[in-house]
Image (cartoon, rainbow, N blue to C red; front, side, top):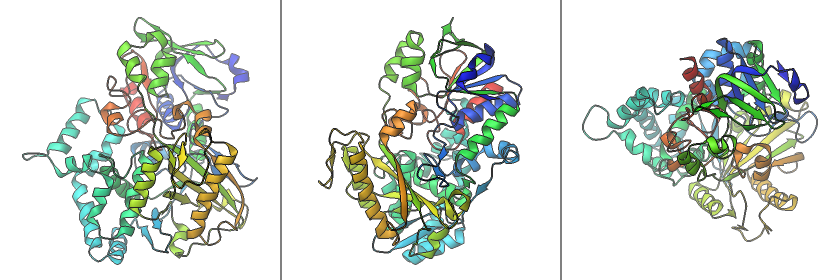
Length: 533
């Protein structure tokens, strides 16, 4: 059952499994464990479960906006959907998809789309620049021998022997020296797409690394371009009917149908440790609940080792957690429209999530400006119109549009264009409005009926993220920087290269662990399988 903080006293004082937080990874782990007969308790500090998977009427009644995450391609392409999809569908979860997962639009009118069909994609690339079609096909074919192993790692503990053997096989192959995949793993996104002559094709593909917390010129970002293209062509850009939170609703129902409890308004302040083992949790009101088997912490390393464990945390991990880093911020602008966006390219009427950009070099420049603490003068960003596939999310004839900017400084110290006064860097109403005005003006260069079609808007800033979810730190939607120094076996920490902590019975999951941010369910699946074994 799902119970609120007011009824907290009705709960029993011990469970097999206690889960701290209710993001989608926590819910997935809890669902697997409850299905297996474990007595599961989930404690959530906010008013309802879901973490950064949340849908609300942010602008006007009848307009349902995804406050944070929206599309779920990696979830539908992975083992969680293969194993739980039928049960989630039986609980009301339905997805709608598109054959055009993404695309790109330039201010001068040039466009391109990514097709799920290989033949159509090759034709699209070749039309952009003769020869780019065969180059695209060759790129996909070159990755094909590695695809199963690579995508399989997203649902495996990297530090375990079998996964390490897979990594070794990917890097070494059967011959002398290293494989081409080893080069791709450390390459940059900009170099990866340089195989194409068309700047339009380059700009359609490379900026997607921003959605994995990387940057186009960052070592290690190149492989993520390949992974995105493969995943998008395989899974499309699926969204739940009714909004992203429909996934949470179905997962929560699955948990409670199998006897699990979800308590909202309950913040955990401590994980007691006795004789090297996590024994349960203590909530903010002093309630103590024992965990007979395990505690699953849906928190980042800094919260876990510096706050929840306190003096029981190993010194080495406390020191490493104190250096846990957060990345760039995110600004999302939710638009309520009186009519659907009128794209000049009619193919965009059913597209998933295209980028609006002035080019890949301009995208890289905007990222550099953001990393220097400046508001980008000409940002690259995505827009998506869920009502094109799910009209139920707006009144008849109306639409919603989400604008997602992933290259924003968490606390701006200036404006690269020298126009916006940022004050002390906090996201005040005035600063937010000025940023919105800049972004809407850019959108209007690509969609002619913007801004005229806008009837209302709402904005989520880095400050909003920080207030809502401690896993966002000062305002990072990806739960911590995901560069090479804080990824793979170094995530969450060098001294903890996986989801098992050195404290017996304590596990960590969520965006701060492998495979990182995004709605994939990877860490929830990994932790559940470890406990079920």
